[in-house]
Length: 152
Image (cartoon, rainbow, N blue to C red; front, side, top):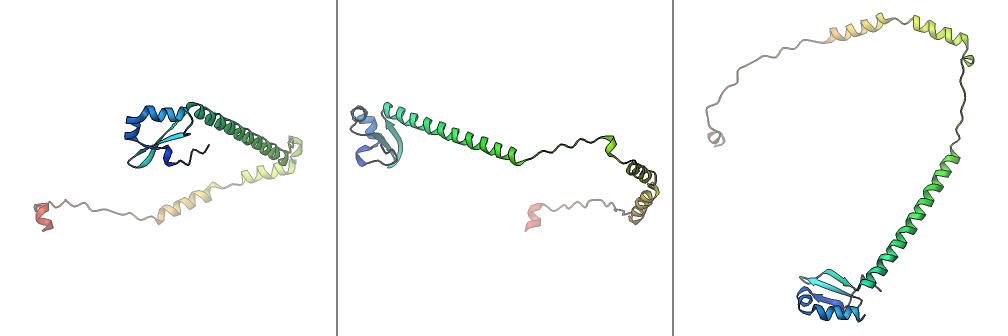
């Protein structure tokens, strides 16, 4: 059963379908042809199938789709398991006892020695570098020439 290829026996124009629909349906029911390809302007446009053939096609499609989904799910679960196995999570509890008192004192001393004056003076230097710019306001000249005269 090849639905992608068709023979001249299976090809009918849309006009023939209208005039000979009973004849075409009988050929399909008697299995003289597998399908009827309906042409519009000489190009394949529609396909008529016996309903049993359609059901077989859909059953095969659903089986393939389900098997494909099952394979994908299996692959995803294998990938997840591999990632979990590859990642080793080490949890190290941190307590206050683990911190040295000397390190704590050093950090507090550094915080006390921070000078904000240096930061403020740097900002002032940046402000001094800026120059004031004035924009002159001028009235808009109204040109009384029409646009047509302008382009000519």
